[in-house]
Image (cartoon, rainbow, N blue to C red; front, side, top):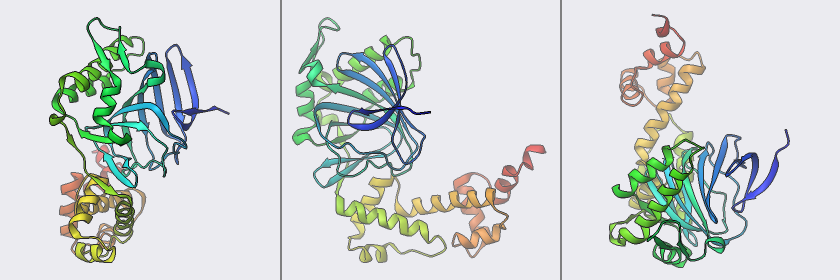
Amino acid sequence: MDLERQKLYGVDAFLLSSSNHIKEYKIKCETQDSSMKIYHLFPGIDYALTSFNSFTCSKREKTLSNVVEISYCKTGRFECEYKKDFLTYVGEGDFAISILNKQVDEPTFPLGIYKGFAIIIDLDITGEIFEGIVEGVSINLAQLIKKFCPDNQCTVIKTPIELLHVFNELYEYSNDNKSGYLRLKVLEIFFLLSEFMPEARFNTSKYFAREYIKKVKAIRNEITGQLSEKIYLKDLAKRYDMSLTVMKDCFKEIYGIPIQRFRREYKMQKACQLLKETDKSIIEIANEMGYDNPNKFSTAFKNIIGNTPSEYKAKNNGFLDRL
């Protein structure tokens, strides 16, 4: 079936359905399973429920200078440009405020998944002052942007508890027939960000130069491509011409966990795949994961997966289900 191709906030998308104030889109990504559900709440203000099962998606080819996005990450991670040639990451429980600038590279989801929402504000439609919806509530959107997006940069913030519960309530609401609730929650977010919470309350994420990001992504590919080999972080840092501290910090910022933990968990997920999809023995799989001692492999596997390799293999071949 041919779908109508559109530009959605400057990004390639395909319209799946449209009814009243709600539109559903498939976003052009490396996989087919990425979507965005748009609720038109106020003139110039949309709420977008987002779901990406992909490592990249199509990039924005031009800047939408008067369009602002407030995005919240429920699951996964998302890469955004902090300022020219510097990148930062929105992780689980973080939110970001940014101008919809032209993107140099395709947007990246380092864990292959991202779920959350975005509030998109078109200042050409709303104007700089948003008022008249609720008596006594006036939101200066221009000041809000100046507060969080100096020099048009993307700011990623660890969500304070006062905002976290509002974000989660907004994300978890699922009644399409009662969008009034969504409107109230969006207004509450605007009010908290602009009127109630001082800048001192916000803890922003780290950012790194694009050159370091590229090196760390190459390191990730190397350590996941040679699972049977031992790795030494000092050697990696030296080979990629980075300090050990910067390499560790940058890796954790991109992938959310320390490099050694990332590799252990990756190994066990790969082991799960081999246990389910091949006839290889547990000893063979342990060797492929770099373990000479099957007992140590079994202990490491159980610590991460929750079952021993033999229990996992039996369960996923249906044996335990029949007991």
